[in-house]
Image: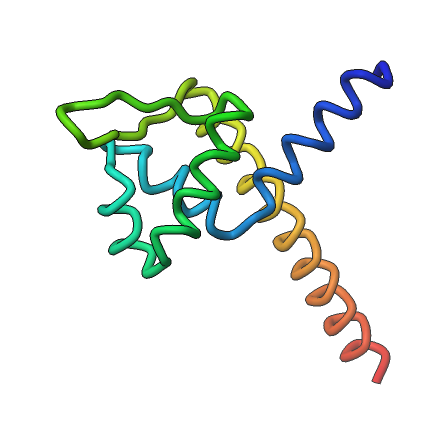
Length: 113
């Protein structure tokens, strides 16, 4: 992996590691939402939502469309959800492997008792 790609991966993971930004991305997965809808849904201040939406827009993860005076936010690229799904599957596999190792240790300890 080149240094440039590595730095881009790190930057993307930093962006996705924020709880509010991840919640925004998940919220706009099924339908476009305004900042006020996100504010109510996530129980965050308007300033907090605006700050995180700005970061998501600058990182090309989210785009907005204006309808009248209201901006609605949507994913810029649906592939982000495939990435998040793969990360979730990876974590679940890791947890399952960990649980299996613990179970194996318990069985081994029981047999040796």
